[in-house]
Length: 182
Image 1 (cartoon, rainbow, N blue to C red):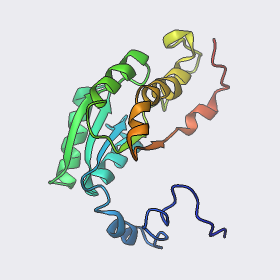
Image 2 (image 1 turned 135 degrees about the horizontal axis):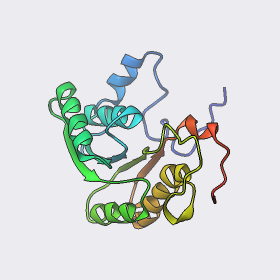
Image 3 (image 1 turned 120 degrees about the vertical axis):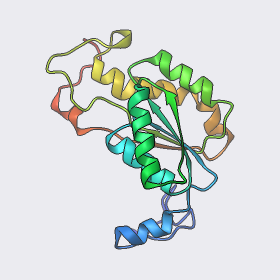
Image 4 (image 1 turned 180 degrees about the vertical axis):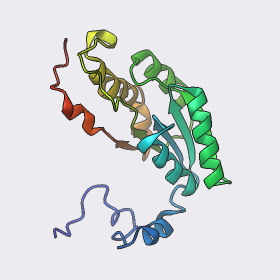
C-alpha cells in the first residue's frame, strides 16, 4: 500500500491511520466536530441523514439544508433522540433550483462554516428524460448544477479558511445515459 501522505489525508490532520473496527474509529472521531459548523444538503434521509447524525455525534452544529421542512424537522427529532445534545437547525435548499442555491449561500455567507456536504440529489430518476431548470435534464440539474451553484456562491468562504467540501453522489445516475441538454 502506498503510504505517501496525500493532500487532506488524516495523517496530515494529525488523526493517524483509521482503526480496524467501526467502534474504534467512532471513538477516535467523536469529538472532531466540536466547535465546527456543517451544512448537509439532502439531510432528511439516506446518506445525508447519516452524515448529519455522525457530525452531530461528533459535536458539530449541523444545518440540515433540505427542500421539505417537515421532513427535515422529523430528521432533526430523530438525530436528537440518538444524540440528545445535538445542535441542529433547518435551512431551505432545493438542489434543483439555482435560485435556492443562491438564497442558501446568502444565508451562510455571514456565518461560520467549516464543512459543506453536498449530498442532495435524485435517487429514483424518471423513466423518461425531463427538463429541469435552465433547460438542462432534471437529474443533471438536481444532482450537479444546483450544488455547483452553491459551491460557486460560497467561493469566498473557501478562501477565508479551512472550509471542507465533501461531495456524495448516487449510483442511480449510471442507470441513464447523460446528455446535459435535452
